[in-house]
Amino acid sequence: MTPAPLTVPATHADDETRQRRLAVREGLAVGLATAAYGVSFGALSVAAGLDIWQTSFVSIVMFSGGSQFALIGVLAAGGVGAGPAAIASAALLGVRNGIYGMRTAPIVGAGLWKRLAAGWITIDESTAVALAQPTPHSRRVGFWVTGLAVFIGWNATTLIGALIGDALGDTRAYGLDAAAAAAFVGLLWPRLKRMQAVAVAVAAAVVAATLTPVLMPGLPVLVAALVAVLVGLFNWLGGPTVPGGASARRGLRS
Amino acid sequence: MTLWQIIIAASIAVLALKLAGYLVPPALLHKPTPSRIADLLTVALLAALIAVQTLGSGQALTVDARIPAVIVAAGLFAIKTPFIVVVIVAALVAAGLRALT
Image (tube, rainbow over all chains, first blue to last red; front, side):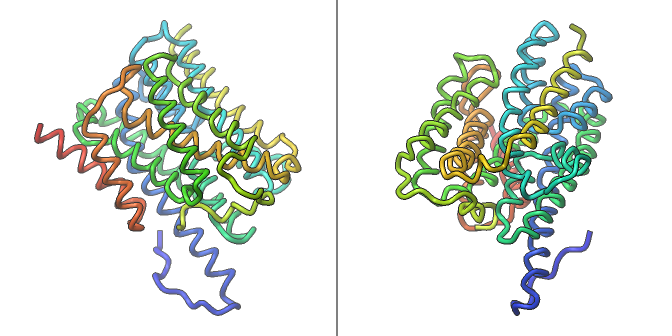
């Protein structure tokens, strides 16, 4: 892939091109970073007892990091007997993708096949990059470039991780678990510009951590999401209401 | 249930949830409250995932090299370090600390 130029002219005529280039560059950067920790999933999945085919199937069809890690986490701990809990955990963590889809549907536009393809790649990364762009066109570009870059990178590195999983041994020794957490920080960080968002983030993190020893894996994250519903419903700490979409500029580029 | 059945059921469930988001009428999000909730949901879910990813070890909470790695990552994002650089540095911090201890 060709890196976009570091400096671009800022004339009005070039504005749309510039926005598109920024969206492409951002999408590819996020795709690269995500691919870097796809190795971690592949290796951990094999360690959890899945074979290479099963590992790749999950990365292709499920294609959602949080759900995938939850699935293999529960299976690693409880084996096939924990199957229902593993399915529930993955599905519950996948609910947020449906919420993202509500936001990305207007960006993608109409058309059955286009929406099927878009739905498939609607994840944290593609949604975050798309919503961070300032114009409808650059949002669309950001969504597709990020989604496809992550899809290709994630599946390629999942396969690599599965293949070298045994050779790699303990993936924790390579810090890949921390890399996954750091990537989530990168997606959250630009969304913390308002007091309300910061409060929700802190409360949600506390709720999720507190409930982790108590509830089935996957549930703490969803219960933590109730914080957002409550704060959003009553607009605590929010000040005057903003019209829909006004917050779309908040995103990766801070 | 066989392992394959678990994997297929979970994968289809997650994919179906993604597609379901595209069936919700977009007008719903043009009202301020649903839009605000959707925004905050993303924040809450990402923050919760960070907490679980950083502290979780199965169903137990553990303090290990992931915590300093995530703190370093947050600091680097604060000074606008590129995404890929931060992710690599975070992995190196965790790997380094584990190699030392």
